[in-house]
Length: 272
Image (cartoon, rainbow, N blue to C red; front, side, top):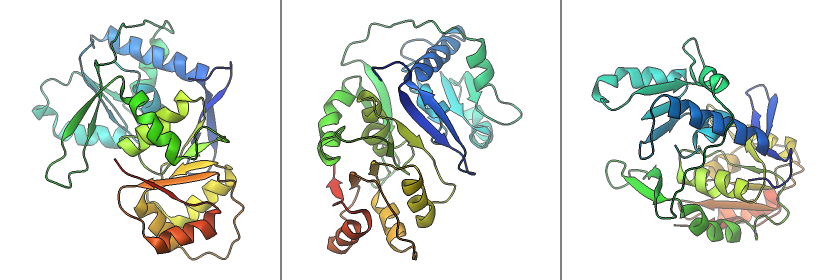
């Protein structure tokens, strides 16, 4: 993570555009507390923890590596409807609403960092496929996955972290594109990340966000780019973008040409 005390790590923007900022020290303290809160409830090495919440500080610190679910009130209602079919689920940490339990557990836990000796080949995260060939399938990745994945991110983001000041993506961090192409690579290099997940993505809000926050690097899935291109706007935006990456399907010449005019950079396509 960040190498300087107080270095900015995460900006969480709300619907009204108000922001809460967290530095790397904050995230280390909070992830330590969450790990200790789970440990106190009997979650052990080898147990799986599900993260069922949108871009947020809760989603970020739940990836601390430590059977439980972290979700919001909306997700908790969905889980409750199928709870009888989840015999191994012991703990549900709810981040908001009347039954919120995530932050009380954090507040009651210790800041102490308890290190676990893990090998590079030990299981770290399960990422599910996009179900283009049937039901979603879980792909188990080891702790080495980030280091193996980094070169693709660095190349597609113009020698990242060169000139990187702030990274954002509309893609949820539950997707490998959001988690391993944006959040974790950025923090590996000490680059802050902007968290803002729209209830319904729209081009104008995305343009405004990029300009208002002076985002320098972004990962925009093809669907997001197509929505942005179709958005009528007479405003001449002043972007500070240094790199735009995309992946998932071919963009085509027209979309690439539009990107050069709109963003002032060539959209880099990646696949994997």
